[in-house]
Length: 298
Image (cartoon, rainbow, N blue to C red; front, side, top):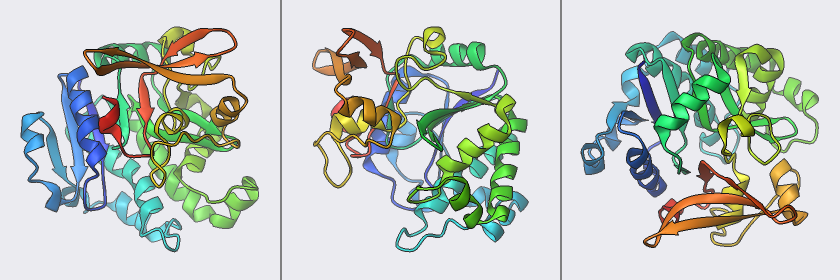
């Protein structure tokens, strides 16, 4: 079984939080870890120190699927410098990597996400619980978060990428009509749409207590909200933040949940979601730090 953890950073200037996430991932997993990034980002000593397989993004750019994506994308929003387009385009690079290197199972981790649970155990649990699926995280009314994603089928990842191109062909107005009240349409809406139209191909991680599959996995996956409650947003780091329109944020603001940690020798061992009403705690396998200050929490 060829398994790999993959990070994708399409734009230049790797964020500092990546190194904290890589350090923690390597601590928890002795197998293949790939970083796909621009060629100019290839000379960091940490790649060798942590035994990271660095793949220049440009080495995969000559591909028909990427050309088709770039022909139809409508994610070039003003004042975002290509951010939303690159966030979505990463799925094509994940598929191309999986195809080129014959990867049977992959976990994709965004650069500002930190894992905390033994990753060998994660692989076995994901394979047992989800089977042949691509697995996202429930997030909002019409959104599935992709900051920590599992897939053990090249065919399904290819199907998702081809569906993204089809969604672009439907046009932006189609999604404004389908998902009223959304401030911006992005890859989270595409993940949600793919699940609605291809439910047999998609699994969902448990993001908060009571979600499907928590009892089987024994841990939660943070889409965004738990990490924001711990360390805030990028523009206001350190100030806990919750958003009422997101399922988890609403429960936090209602006073139901908090986050706490276990420590050993001054280092974080595990974060937990604490149900203040039931006085129960639930392990968090990941935290997603919008603050980008992941080094504070490892």
